[in-house]
Each structure stands twice: as structure tokens, then as C-alpha cells.
Image (cartoon, rainbow, N blue to C red; front, side, top):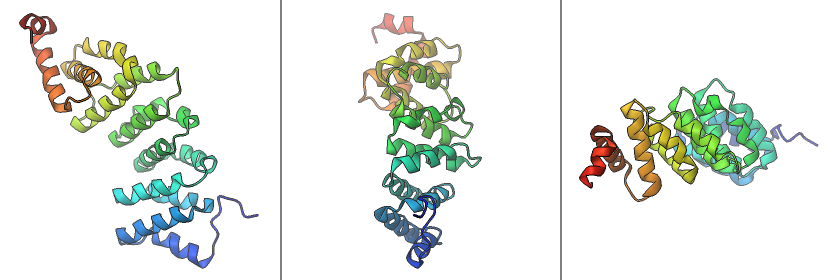
Length: 228
């Protein structure tokens, strides 16, 4: 029997895997679709390796889909190993794929260093994966870890963090109260904006941020006194 982590080296397989690195992104997309449709466990290494360097978002998404088609007992250990890669895209895409597979047994691999990764895209992927995979009873600890980064980055980073926190539900409220009390107005406003999103999912993030900044600037007591 051929080991599952060794690609069958017949001519169709060679051509298909070679197409994953073709110069034309449409060719790579079709190759990833074909690999996923075929769902051969022997392709896992090639798929994971390509995820680390593929420049096209759409092709990466197809590579992730192809990996979700394979048995999780094969893909999850390989993806967990990829989380230790020095290449930021490798870590980010592995986290994204783990979130799509949805195996909560992978949660311990989402370490504190990944949640606080210096690369914003890796951190954002870690936040999204963590809230999908977190086991019951560990949501509060995760909320505190995420809330420690309130105020981080640009608008998109802060929106990602707020969405991740809100996905955890009411357990985030103590962490948000601590954030609101911060002496840093950026942290305080981000905490308040996230709280507004938690209680009103229909509010736009930018509107929540503007309202939070207004409260921080005026002071909560003055806002309550105006009846606004």
C-alpha cells in the first residue's frame, strides 16, 4: 500500500500538480478544483505547500476547499505543523483552512503567539479560527486574550477583532468593560464600539466607532446627562 502522504506519480497526477504552479491563475484555479474533486489524500502535501505561496485569493480559497475534501485525520496534523512556518501566508492560510474544516481538536494549536502575531493577516486568521474552534468553557479566556488587542491596527483589523469578539457572545462583556476603562482613547473607543455591535448587530461598524468616540470625548456621565 502506498502511504497517504506520498503522491501517486502517474502522468495525470504529475500534470495536474504541475498545473497548480502554472503562470495563469485561471489554470491554477482549475487545477485546484480538479484536485479537490478527485480528493486523493496523496495530494495533501502539494496543496498545503501551494497555499503558502499562492498569490491569488481565489485560488487560495479553492486550495482550501480541496483540503476540506480530504480526511481531517490527514489534513489537520499537516496544517497544525504549518502553523509553525516562518512564512506568514503559510500560517494565515493554515488557520483559515482549519476554521473551514471545523475540527475543535485543532484549537490548542492556535497559540497565544498566533493570536498576537505581528502580521495582521495571521492574527486576523487566528481570531476567526479561534472563535470557530473554541471548546465550551474556554470562551471567556479567549475573550480576554482577544480584548487585550483592542485598538490594534487599522479599520479593517479592528473590525475583524470586533467581529471575532462579538461572535463569542455575552462572555465578552467583562473584557469590554476593562477595555472601556483604558486610559488610551483608541482602546476605549474600540471597546465601546464592540459593545455597541454586541447589543445591536445591525449597526454599521463605522457608525459604532463614531458613537464610541463621541462618548469617549464627552465622557459617559455627560452623555447620559444629555439624554443622548
